[in-house]
Amino acid sequence: MFGDASLPALVYLPGLHGDWTLVTGFRAALANRLRFVEVTYPRSLTWTIADYANAIGDALLDQGISQGWLLAESFGSQIAWALMEKNLPGAEAEHTSRHERPFGIEGMILAGGFVKHPWKHGPALLSWIGEMTPMKSYRLELKLYAWYSKFRHRNAPEVRASIKEFVARRTDLDRQAMRERLGLLKHYDPRPVARQTQAPVYYLAGLVDPLVPWVLVRWWLRRNCPGYRAGKTFWLADHNVLATSPVRAADLVLQWMKRQQE
Image 1 (cartoon, one colour):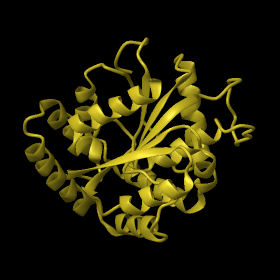
Image 2 (cartoon, rainbow, N blue to C red):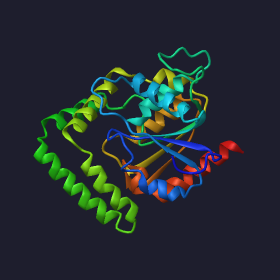
Image 3 (spheres, helix red, strand yellow):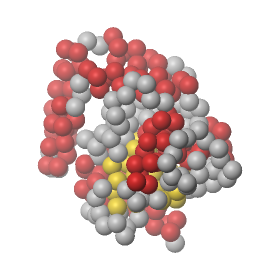
Image 4 (cartoon, helix red, strand yellow):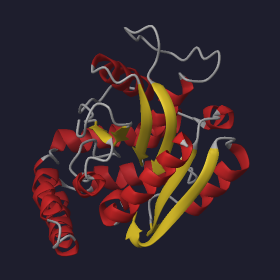
């Protein structure tokens, strides 16, 4: 947790990689203007989306964080919808919470996220590619990514330092957990939740995104989600928009949250 407890809370739900290592630039850009809460997923091969949502909701409440905004990146959007389900009127979402009330969601920002993934076989294909890629090739891919990231973030030392952590945490078990998370997308459909969501929903995207077709996601939200307010696409960013456009993304997130408070 970063920032004073008196500030509005923004809870970061990471993508498939499941940790903090790609959001340090965004956190630095917030400059303690919010209470920024980071979550790290366990490398579980058995958890369901509901398990993730229950554990995160309980962890937030255990820390005295009873309400706030969700910043849901890519896969994290699925957990965000599961948490949102608990906030719907008359909701009886599957949960084993130790708390009488669920974590209260004041609003949600999807960063390269989605409802039901628009490409029916996209997650399965990505999982198959990962399964077919040997660890040796995967390590080479990580080295190339680290080189690219150090070049792109050459003026952001806090981001360059986190890239080493990102690479170090990509173990074989970590890869297995990411493939399991991809598999969960086949069985979880949050569209009924989105159709009932009245809380404000915003969307952040990078123009270059081969993983999630943000045009289709925003089109669906505009037509089907009553809480959808607005979205923004950054032209020089990619799927990981919080890392590739951290300053502009942070300023816009603050603007959206302030708009709702006013």
